[in-house]
Image (tube, rainbow, N blue to C red; front, side, top):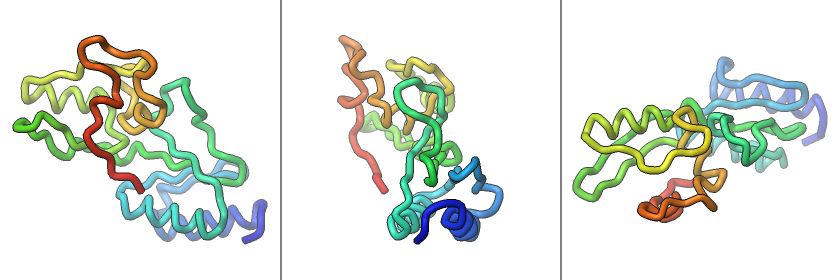
Length: 159
């Protein structure tokens, strides 16, 4: 696929068909795409791979560890629509949540069961879980009791 405005025009049209017009926007020669489901992320990544288009994931954009700007002539994959706490398993003390869930929402869900979060990102309760993981979480800053985020992740679903 060609580079430049024509390429981005075609990508925008195709992504609008995949995700919906309200979830695809444009900034200059870059696109911001806000998927709601893993299948939508997979479709965006297949298209980006096929067209050799750079993609950058973004959580809530509250941190200072990584860029939250879209790549030039690329796609910024904004994950804040994927914002649900899916399950709290009290038997094994795990939480399953989507990448765009904020720490405030996660804390609220855990608090309803009598639990609390012991490590917070520097950007606080508005930070997203996926953004926190993407940016190293609390490492190299750790808790002497609870370790760092890497020691607390049991599994990831990666697209």
